Length: 347
Image 1 (cartoon, one colour):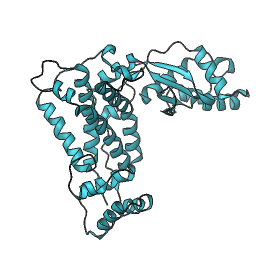
Image 2: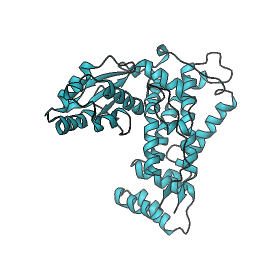
Image 3: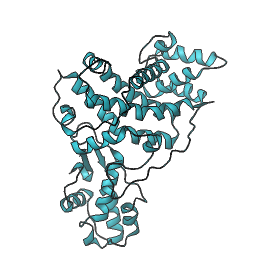
Image 4: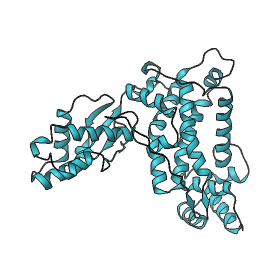
């Protein structure tokens, strides 16, 4: 979603009539934005806004106008001009946000296109460019092998500073006294770095549940492989807009737990690619693990519902295309992330 919106903004800059009065047709700075040689920043919108994502693009454009056209204009005025001159976008509902941000919410057509395309994703797709919004066909960039590194001493030091609860301090003391630590222990430490509520006792005592991180990841893979064995993922699945959960774009019904859980996992899937890319580019295993755990937690919020378990039973006669697609998309995203975590180099 973030990558597609960035591509939309790139096309907007390239075609905008609002920038022509400033005589910037030959501006190198504008050309770099329009041609994708300079990335257009897109971020999550604050939770109190109706929009899902936002971009400070007009702050940069206003600086270019002031510098190269000697015209002083506020970002919010430029954002208003830009959207007023733009045609209605095919995939995003655009609006001007505070101080000049460009806000966006994907429409149902975008969500359907995104989810239908994601099921055949691979690691190369997760690290590639837009595959929904593009002026030309996009050739996915191949994923280069990435080995992430984690220093145990640094992890323990940072956790000792950020977490002062007795359970964590006891766990860290035990880690420091051990001559060698397993990959599972390192995984637990990485997860605790990003999740302040994670209880180390669950891992230490071998309890089953989301707080025992290594067990949780393995259990997720076991569930997915079970679905694969039932030929859930063999065929291409295509959904339509009327099959999307209603709470994705309308006030939620607290009683409809399947709808709420489906909307939750869709929101996570829409953001997964960009967070995966950020983790890989920055070489942060803790961020990659946090991103993957968020996806898996949202998956189980849906998978564990009794109605869903009944509908995905091999003998069920009421198979739901949207549920099948969400599970297939989850596996498509999680598999390369889990594979990368397994290559984690521990110092």
